Length: 458
Ligand code: AMP
Image (cartoon, rainbow, N blue to C red; front, top):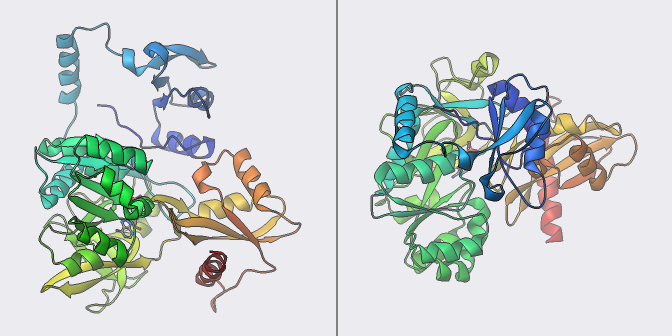
């Protein structure tokens, strides 16, 4: 009956502080790490003076023992020991009793939105619809008890829960959980005879490395996700006798996915079609409720059995994030193209101001507001810059009163306890920020500028 709030181990005070208060978290679950950042100490510090956190739970501690607490929380509780004083039948009874209190429309998890505003938004996913999302995904791919489903990206993300944990469990498939270390995972995939894997943009390069597929030689199907698929990669996979398709998905709900029998061109160019016949898709002129003309690019808006009707406790944001009749405005651009006689969805960019760093979404406004807290930064605009491995990285354009280099900006972010993946990875000082005719910062121009610079330096 617990509701997980899907934060990342990479999150720091800047993120956890806001999210744990917004969700009124009762406990903070962290891993005990031998080296690097001390997550247990961090959780205890975060719990200090917190209005709702009552427990710090740990996994992976030595001997699974409870640990020392801090001000406010007497002891940390080792997850491994929970229930160790109960017999198996008592454990089963407790689980059954807890499950009886959970209804199909109760909260199953709070996911985090990649969102467009400086404040993180929580995505309420509910038991029946979240499970259905995974069942529909598994059915579209024809997964079953003989399937061995591999996953290399963090499992707490929506794709991890839906495509890996729930999808495999829903059809009795075996789940093979790798890590982002592609080569180490390839070894595991081969050994455990994984046959299907979801591959995010961050692993496209690894996939192009022949050694990866040699090690993971049991793979027969790959689902590619996160960005347009390079034709060379697709061709290469086909030459090796692999089936490749595409997935477009989001924590807010809608999944589009290739069908097994889609023609090659459809699987290469498009993200297929929605996985449920109950999904409804509209392509609207951005900022309006007018559908675009047939075949034109418009903002992808969706409604359906597993797409949220609203963010958690966010009335103001819901007013702009949904159309009057409840279609979620994704901020992605898409168009329909008829391929093999059937309409398929092509993703054509986005209008939301986020950077997609290897699948981790970074909100530009959030980073700009943090930059503006630096005493020497007067104006800031954050844009994506191309990166061969991660797809995109964050570049900050700044107007300054005294010089600020990358090290100073990163120090500023460290002091504010911002998750490292959000730190700008390049800083460009400019005399002024370019503006569009209506006076808005011309981010397209900045993106084009930095892409040219990166290409020159490559
Ligand atoms: P998340 O909620 O973190 O899973 O992110 C969902 C967002 O990722 C979407 O709204 C898109 O902007 C992006 N995305 C997911 N799949 C694709 C894809 N196949 N092609 C392009 N963008 C994608």
